[in-house]
Length: 257
Image (cartoon, rainbow, N blue to C red):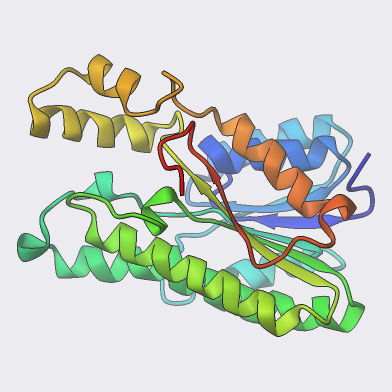
């Protein structure tokens, strides 16, 4: 197994990409600390991880709360260390899509906090012990919206652009310390969040959901969460020791630059 004796923290792990990433890491031998808001879903995930013979610590935390980063890091005290940090949790534009001139200021603040400030705070806590051990992996789940933009999703796009800037800056700062920092930029992944976004775009454009879903990705289908998860495993593994400061696009050909 690629990740034997490694311990990973995965945020937003209760469903979708986060759950797929957590399970993929566990299958490769990693023990886990997982966070999300839904305790029942986290307990279900932990039961599945434990069925794979790995440890799993669940922390039900709302990352929009003022003390969220402290609560997550406190949960990590139940394990010896964090070798792999996966900043996956996020708020999508589908939660409140609006043009900028009508944007909800509170939603802007919440999106930037969960999508950018929490990764910053968790990196700030995770990196010093990684540097001291001369080993660590940080994987930030960004988006192609961090390379392009999102109609009626200014907060989401801004947060993901910021996450890519954070990724590249941290990679430069720890490149001599045995720690890699990379980002994955998924396209339209199969998820409830993207279901809502596609439904919004279909209504906005006067098209059917099925038409939007089929044609938004050049390969003719959405990206599966497991496709993102397997790439995260690679970035967490020893095979990616020379890979840092990069933003990897997995979008079925939707962007080609």
